[in-house]
Image (tube, rainbow, N blue to C red; front, side):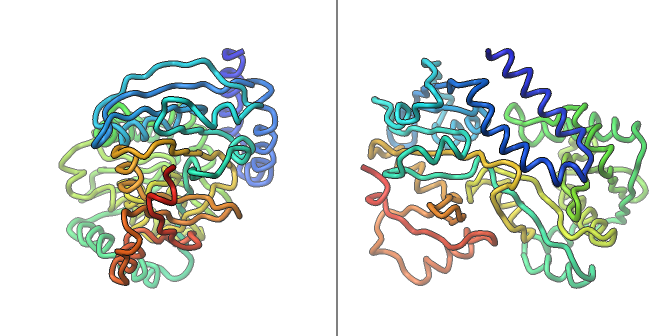
Length: 381
């Protein structure tokens, strides 16, 4: 059954890559809904792992159930070193209460469809999206958009680096250029920036996106130093892959990635697109990739074509559990389906207007209804 499921999943992914933009916009939301209904019949059991290791301040045991995609990041932030992983017996999709309490675990995590997650209890639990969408509005005159972007000090620094060199943005429809982008820029950069945890877009997928999108090169003093592959999606230009030449560390230090972002934003603005989609990322507000996308002024949201969610239940009050909650503010889905930022603190009586202002500055992001400030007593048993 698992072989059949994997084969069906690969065919489904390839169908998405090859879908023309007009069909993609109209059919994908319905097809994702169909997927949510069909998958439990094809694969009725959920995979289960137990992680055991050292958390910050105390040992930590986590039971993780469902989609494997999310696990790499959680291991990194929950444990001080790679935990021992034990494969457990699968559990039925149709009996979610069986996964709501895993004896012996400090935290239980379930990653799956919205239909699965909404059947799990909310007490001592939070629900987050599997990832959040990050879209930047780019309508209007370029001068006005540039001034809006530069309100962020960090983005001003990117513009400063851009101004040090003679950059030109060029588009290509050449498949040989796509191969150069993929092998000389994208793969080396992903290896340099993310190492073994990099999630790689396949070359076949890149070709399909190229058919419906744009390959853009950044030239500096006449030489190609970076490139980005984007897919057209109605009025939105969506990032697919990005890279600098040979993943060169010096180019990365010279903020060539930032220059590529600015060049693509300007090109999309002047070409007539209304949004640039910076793609999704895990919903953790202190995570480097989230902060990088946020600084450009993106608006976050729950992706319209995927409603995968992650449920966390906190079963024990330990130093490691407290450390995870306190150090990982996140975007949670409330019971009305809205996104809110969650910050967990020790003592609610210690909140000051200055602290609230700092949290708003650091975490409140367009697309969130508000920030929720919660104490450990409100989340832990």
